[in-house]
Length: 196
Image (cartoon, rainbow, N blue to C red; front, side):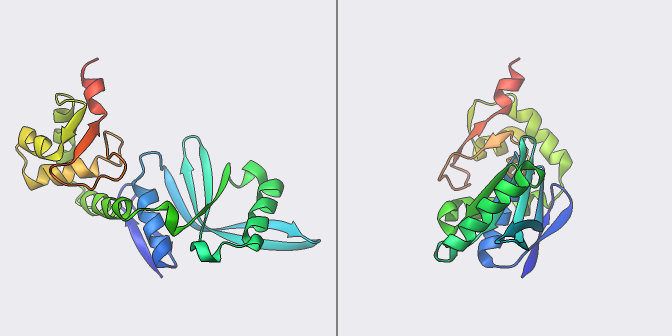
């Protein structure tokens, strides 16, 4: 059990297992995430009895809320599936718009390592550095190396850290299965905005 500091929303979110921690760091760093709440109680009725289930996380996005049951694949059983089905039927979108089971098979080591780096660098709270990088991104191509961002800004390691922090804002996107490194090509979404 522990907590992850969410530097984007300036709060802490609790987790109860290593798998939950991994899922949490990935959820917190997704650009579409507006908020993540832990241990959210959903009530339902099964066989005439009132019951409750605690979702490990509920992620709020602009498009709605996703309730996550974070479980190791070996712990996903018919009882859990039936619980989620009943909650979905009985609570519907009053609780969440989608109900999902997230297992270790849904996360890659690369995603988790990248997310940890994004959180760590965002914890610098270097808004000036992020603004300088953001401005430079508008002049750079749609596919860009982190090393090119660092060179263009002249900020050195500070520029690298600010660029990585901007991934959560959606200005840069890491392609699937690409580890954050100076020689990694990222998708520069700010390049299109700068050419308008």
